[in-house]
Each structure stands twice: as C-alpha cells, then as structure tokens.
Amino acid sequence: MALRTNPTLRQRRLGTELRRMREQAGLGGSQLARQLGINPAHVTQMESGKTGLSVERLYTIAGMCMCDNQPLLDALAEVIADRGKGGWWEEYRGVLPVDYLEVAELEGHAKRITSFAMVYIPGLLQTRSYASALFTRGPLPLLPQEVDLRTTFRLRRQQVVRSGGTPYLALVHEAALRGQYGGRDVLIGQLAALVEDSEHPGISIRIVPFEVADFPIPSEDLTHLTGPVPELDTVQADASYGSHVFDLPAHLSRYRATLEHIRSVALQEDESRSFIRSIMEEMQNRHD
Image (tube, rainbow, N blue to C red):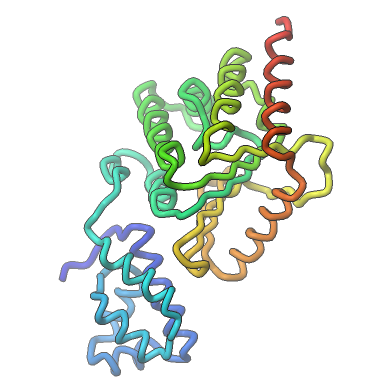
C-alpha cells in the first residue's frame, strides 16, 4: 500500500489515538510491531496517518493494548470505514491553504460546535460582504479572485450549521459586534443577519457585553468541536500566526472549562438578540 503524502486531519487523529492507546499500555512501537508481526516502521506510519489499517487490525491492536473503551473503538472504526469518502472541501485541496480545509473537515464531522469570538463575527455566521471585507483587509494582500474564492469557501462552510444537522452555540464578545471592517453599511447588514440567524432552531447566539469583566479572556478565538465520544473532541484556535488544533486531554479539559465559564456569563438568547438590535439601531442612527 502506497504511503499517504498528505494525510487528512481525521487520518492523523486516528493515528494519534492509536499511539495513545499503545503508550497507555506501556508498549513501545517495536514491541507492538513484534506482537503484530510487522515492521516497526509500519507502526510509525499507522500512527502518523501515512498508512491505513482495517477495522480488524484496530481491534487486534486494542486487544494487545488492553483497551476496552468500546465507544472510542466504535468511533475509530467509523473513521476507518469512512476512508475514501472525502468531503466537499477536498475540491479545494491544492487551491486553498491546508488550514482552511482542516477547519471545514473538523466542522463537517462534529456532532456539536461551540465557538467564542472576541474580534470578528464567527466565520460560520459571516455575510458575504463582511467576509470579503476581512479577506480584502487582511495582513496579506490578495488578488480579487483569491478574495472571492476564500469568501465562497467560508460561506459554503456555513451549510454545516444552517442545515440544522449540527447544533451551534456562538459566544460573541461585544467588541466583535462593533468592528466596522467593511464600513458601517457592511456591519449593519452583518448585525441584521445575526438577528436572523439567532432565530434559527439549530443556532444559538449569546453575547458577552463589555460590562462583563469576570470571565477568562482567551488570547485567540476558539472553536470546540464535539466528537462522537469525548476523547475525540477537538479545539481549534485562530491566532495571528494561523490556525492551531488541540486534542490533548489536558488541553481539551482547559478549553472546555474556559468556554463553559464564558457561556455562564453571556446574555441569554433573547437578551442577546435585543442587544444586537440595539447596536444595529445605534449604527443606523449614527451620522458620518
């Protein structure tokens, strides 16, 4: 079997879970390879996502590692069964940065999505005009066709929550509601879209006003993507240096606690809707 040169995020996560399973059992890669009757390099390749494995081999490895976490094994077996079933984002491979594809891949397989945005309206809720303005005014100059491509990709990502199949909680700081990145009219249109989205049955938008000071302010925008089992949860962070993915248990626990604290101090849905409307009216009444 030929090695994968660019394994997907999901393939790499499967390999990571295999490595954790082995390490928790106190087995070295060479020890596991000897028990399986394969080359140690093959174990390394499986754990890096560069080569696949069958469901049967997954359960063989689980037995050797004394892993009896059936829900986790069932979830990993589903990942294996899904190989070759690329998502819509694969159409953009080689055209857009890999980070873009991996965010869409995470969202496409999440059971629930929770995000916190401090500076910008969350990508899953941005209008075309707002998203285009962000790409146009970004740190790197982009040609108009690149701006259009990235904007179209971002709007296509939104189908995962607009379809109603994936519940979405957006925690948004007031600062993000006031950033006029594309001008006042673009912001007013974006705020009107947020009000409309807040009434969608699968979307919950809750605002954190400036006056709320008692909450841990993350240094980056965060998205918690709930997996089929807690062990397969993922946190994705957007920072100035790019996108980063966290899946270590300690990291997941910390970010879950952070988002839960923010949720506990955010306005309720009806209050948030009224708050967004008040800022929109303020912008509409403001004279240049």
